[in-house]
Image (cartoon, rainbow, N blue to C red; front, side, top):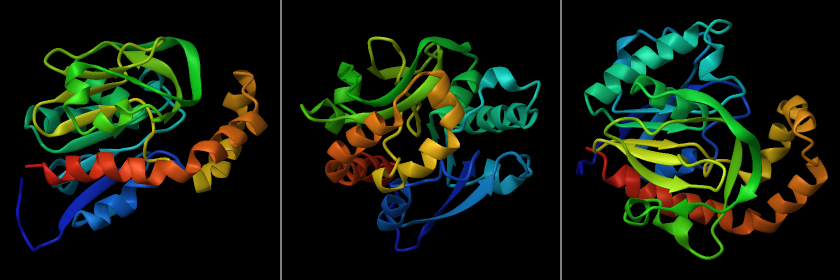
Length: 239
């Protein structure tokens, strides 16, 4: 753990505007971090400030590793992550970000058995219960799932969480890298933007937006505190 009065700097790669740091943003600020958001599709992903960032956060989005042919910048993201993970540089991947991390570590990324969209609990492994994800093992804990792809557990990674349909929901790699297939950063107060932005996906998966809205309202009061309880200890322990 780094002890310093100086604020630290994180770089955030965003793929679509509404999937932003959300509840992670305030957690970063409270933990002594400032952050800069770059648009992954248009940023120079080879710049040194990304390779050398004290912390790199790669957020979610509606595309996947299999779409590299249409979105070549994804290959540059994977190359960036390869360098950071090889050097045990602090790195957090969420949803698409976790899949890109898996790909960077040489694991297969592929379509999952079903679309997993909505609020649901996780099953933590023993390693997960001993990690910053421990609050997600509590009886009422829930996270927002919003994915259709999955990945094999990368060699050398530690599985932290699963669901019945997706064996690999979270993994740790080295001392400083965390990959989350699900969303604990999503702010329930802003999910209307997600419903609009993902309307085609929701319709294709036959997800009821009113039902999703009702479920969000039910869990919303406890989600910000849950996010803080997970992100704060992880950020404190970063080398």
